[in-house]
Structure formats: structure tokens, C-alpha cells
Length: 329
Image (cartoon, rainbow, N blue to C red; front, side, top):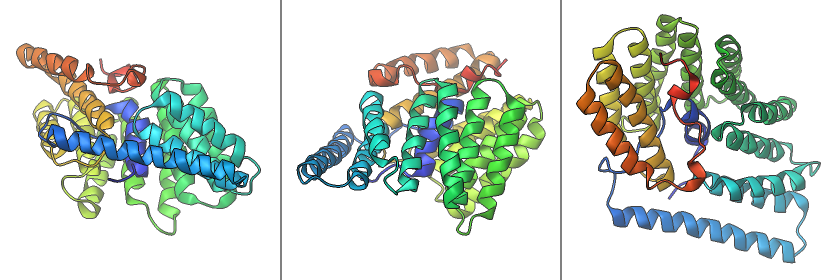
């Protein structure tokens, strides 16, 4: 079992939202029901372990920094499971303890986590406020990777509000910071390029956006396995941009390849995997509708309904498809 890394949480909790290009899931042959249940048990055990550590630390009258760090870890684990209510409570506790505790980077991480929750549930202004607070803290620490990520995720909130120019400018700032980082975070670089590419496409500059997507694809190929979240995400994004450029066959091939690669994605929380597959299917379904492939579109809708019935109630308000941006038509 593993924790969601920055790229994975970014594209599920944030970008997941925006463009259905995230982790793909579920019944695509990724694993047996027993293996899925075993994975869920492992995630649950990790949460129980953290809750026990918090209780012990409280009984030992641990300092604010230690307790706040544990609450932050627990908040992230709840977030990974799409348990938004418990995640929010844990982030609030972490923020209260970490503020002024001399651990600025962890305090900023908690602000960033709150922003993720707000963005995933469509609270765009609130998400941007938390991101800006986190950005200000990261700037004081000199962490260019995190500064770049904050610019990039602020850009996402602008995209959801249909402010493509602001999103393009903000994501461009993010790319500058990420390029200047002493140790490149290749996953964040891929995410930033895709964010910028979407922003350009929503400015009706999809040919330029495709250049960013191609850079992201080349980088993902060089730095990550073929069956990776980075490659899968890049292919779905390419499918969207090709569609908007009128290259329907290319779009179809890219989305189909993303679906194939998704079969190899494992070791992520089951709610994330199922929910992400639903979002990719929705985007593919929009393409099918637009190209008048009604039987295939109807079958896709039926599969989506079946998968959605397995989703936790906490995700019912997720902002999880590119269609929500209002640029599809």
C-alpha cells in the first residue's frame, strides 16, 4: 500500500475535478474483488493507526507541532478515501495546532489540503483563498516546487469559473517556478503543462495547448512507466484537445489508449479508482455523443450509472468533469 503522492492527489482532488483525466478505475480488470477489499482494509488500518498515535500523543501532552503533524497525516488519509467530512475536521485541527508552531511548511500543507477539499466540492472562491494563503507561506520558505504547484492549482479554480486568461497566466507562473526548482518534480511538471494546455485551449488556442500536452507526454514517457497515472492523464488530456481541434479519430485513439493503460493502475484507494474511471468515461461519453454514436454513448451512460452507485456519498458533490467547466459546446 502507498500514500497518494502529490501528482495523484493533485489530479484526483483538484485536477480530478476539472478535466476527468485522472486515475482510472474499477472494473477495467485492475484487480479481483478480494484484492480490492484487502487494499481497503490496509487503508483503514493506516487510519486507525494514526488515530491511535494521536490519542497517545494527547495523553502524553505532546507539543502542538507533533500533534498538528499527526492530524495533518490523518486528514490526508481521509482525503485519499474521499471522506471529505472527516478530512475537513482533521485539517481544521491541524491548522489550529500548526499555526505559529514553527513548522511553516506543514501549516502550508494543511492550507493546501483545505484548498483541495474546497475545489473538489465546487467551493472555488474558498479554494483559491486557501491556496493563496499557502502560496504566501511557501514563498517565505523558498520552496519553488510548492510555489509552482500553488500557482498551478489557483489556475484550476479560475478554469472552473470560466476565466481562461487568468488561468493561463497563473499556470504560466507555475511553470516558471517549477523549472527553477533545484530538484525537479516531474509529476508536478506534467500536471502544470496539462493545466496550461487546457487554459490555452479554453482561450480557443488549442493548437498551442496541444504543444504543452505533447511536452507533457514526452516528459511522462521519459520519467514514468507506460502504465502510470502521468501517462494515462496525458493521453486523456490529449484526447480532449484533439477533439476540440476537430481531430476526432486522433481523440478517440488517445482516449482508448488511456483506458487501456488504466488497467495497469493499482495501489490507490478504491473510491478514487472508481470515481476517476467514471470521470474519464464521462469525457469519452461526451465525444461519443458529439460524433452521433448513440448506442455506444448509451452503453457508456449505463456503465457510469452502475459505477456511480458504488461511490461514497461524500463524493456526490465533487466537481469532477470537464463538462462542468462549460466549455464543451
